[in-house]
Amino acid sequence: MIQLKNAQEINKIRESCHLLSEMFDILRKQIEPGITTGELDETAYDFITKNGGKPAFLGYMGFPASLCTSVNEEVIHGIPGNRKLHEGDVVSIDCGIDFHGYFSDSAFTAAVGSVGKEVSQLLKTTEESLYLGIEQAVNKNRIHDISRAVYNHADEKGYGVVRQYTGHGVGFSQHEDPQIPNYIGRNPNPRIKPGMVLAIEPMINLGTWKVAELDDGWTVITADRSVSAHFEHTVAVYEDHTEILTRQEFPVLN
Ligand code: MG
Ligand code: MG
Image (cartoon, rainbow, N blue to C red; front, side, top):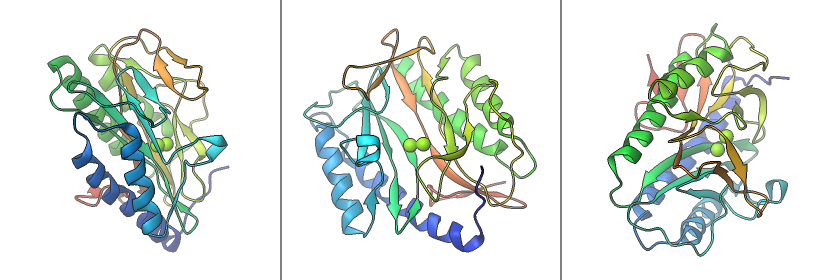
């Protein structure tokens, strides 16, 4: 069941989203060769709790941290720890905040120092495919319009589009209906309506779309160990526009 949100509820979700986007600005500056993923997680935990929020991932189905930190061939759900980031790595940071019962969700992939052209192109295309998806996340369109826009842009460049994990509704909890796949499958294809709050999140691989899970029971990697990228925003749909809640600058796309 898709739960629509009223204006007051979206205002609360926006607060959660803005807190998350503020935190990402801090993390982006911290990502440098030599830092550990555990140190990034500590920054996140401190920031969220000092601001009166709860790290929504911490304890979610037993996940042990506030951030997912996925390095290089890791797609999503990487567990922060002692791993040091090195020049030329990429790290995907994914986080959700529970702010007084209202949930946000966002992710980005950052280059650590400088990365090769092939990898920076992957990051650029993945972020572009997120924005192309968001452009379709408007009143009266359908979920598959988002999926198609994301998929086509990444597929055109020959990248693998992850199928096993999808975007989703968000706001009253971390994961709600509808599912928002990054390809057109056999999932339901509901119409997009005002009051929907959606987390759109392309996960795109340099190589195959296929993924595997590590023995830690969490970390998802690409099946061919190629590099992967992940960008995600939470957006709110209104009658005549869509607002990117997890981006404070230029939140409205026309
Ligand atoms: Mg996320
Ligand atoms: Mg998500």
